[in-house]
Length: 432
Image 1 (cartoon, helix red, strand yellow):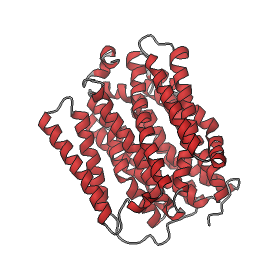
Image 2 (cartoon, one colour):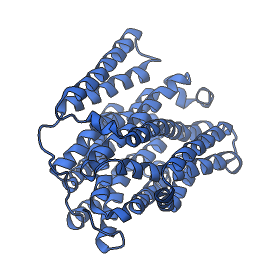
Image 3 (cartoon, one colour):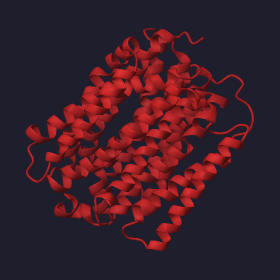
Image 4 (cartoon, one colour):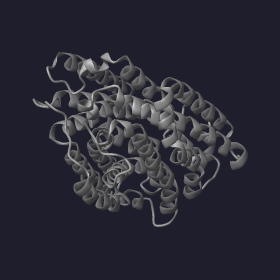
């Protein structure tokens, strides 16, 4: 049984390592959103290219994150986590020197591969290392301190975009990796699932990633590409998705074992994850553009404007995790999404000439309280609903659900709103 206590020196080092690693991916997502308008102007990219700048990362991350969790369970969670951190840093360097939108999108896809290795490992290391009595608080602290990256990210990203340039948004990951890797190798114990043997489900991973890529292409290009091409791509994506389900049901060692969903709690929490993270992914993608394109904020001002939700996460997530341990997850997982929905509805008031104090801030505070209520209990419930030996798999499935939800939202919302490929260049066209 894991016996590291959170208050011990080793426990603090483990927490620091997992926060550093996960913050790379979290910081990157928040910072990239702030940089999108400037990236579009500098690389002469249209709205579809900006969507792909976000979604190329999401496609490979969501498609391979289950395989990443399984690799950690098999070969060692610390080892795979470290490989993921290094991979992510190298891909970030490629993003930072990309000469055009095509290279940037390809490098973002490579970043997603690194994220698929490190993201499930960070939570699995917590689950596999800490004493059961400390796991809820450890997950809460991980969520809260990870919020530092999310909170600092938009501010630092905005400063970088308005100052040295958007390329430094990606280059920032390199020093984080240089700090994270030696700490992990020195202080984090290795762990792996017992009896994790056999062949990897490479076919399942390929089918899953292909389905996501094809369906994403169809959604993003629906407004501009040839109709037959879009329809053919959508059909191919649907076929790949069906094939993925069939393969997972028939293989002896599937990437996503159907029996893990025999836990009703695990299934329910992942359905909540799909709904909530679709809303959050679409919200933060469009909110940063709305503040810059329509309200007229600079990148720094837009990034700073979005600090309240992550600041609340930092301050209150640990207590939220402890509260969920005492009262159970049902009430937090009900109240949290309702508060998030209320905050998003309040953002409907944000248009040309909007006041930050009167219009933007109240919406973000309500949204932040919803995220505080929801995120830590959701994560702890996912990990607690399966055996420790399957922590990497459970974390991978839940992260995949979150990424797929955000991916679909970013791809679909501009289409549903009727935005053209150049909408982000014109306030009137974007503020539909």
